[in-house]
Image 1 (cartoon, rainbow, N blue to C red):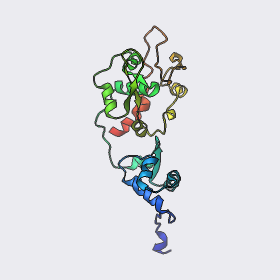
Image 2: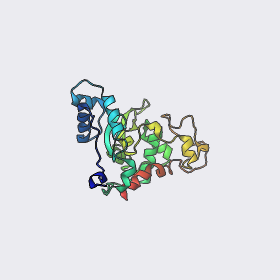
Image 3: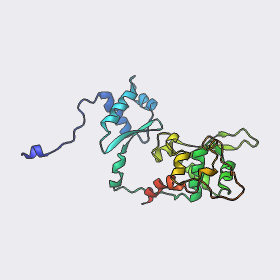
Image 4: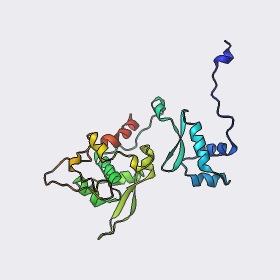
Length: 229
């Protein structure tokens, strides 16, 4: 067998259209994920961007780089099953405390939620900088004020939170039954009618119980560990 036949050369599809090439180039050059409207604005040609993105997504499906959509924004990323082979090390500038992870979990499952509601759920007052760290990471953001005396600010998660944890939408997060089956919470002490509906959790018993969010750091903290290794 000739050496020529021994060589296997990876070839990109030859039938890629000019518009697909343009969209591909725009996404590669973008500093952040782009939504369809932003891509359309850069193309300056009236066309079906969704169809082009769908075509590119299929073309890159089995490659080292995949085209992914998170929170309705598109970007190229290293294939998830190849991440362990990458030599580039990512270092977290700030290590999240247990309090910050608990606070994030509460906001995730009860948004929109106020600072005082978060403190009531955790059972302790905020340490200095706990919420500020999450704001600095742009994982949470203010979202209006609650219509009660004092008009406190409410907090919700951001698209950056979804992107960091590789979620398409918040409903992709484990629900109360899944959290309970994984042993992360005791659903016997959780009012399922208010959990994750925008209202906050209240203790049902007078006896002091373990904070149900203290172990959710096993879920949210898993990704953070990989950043420090």
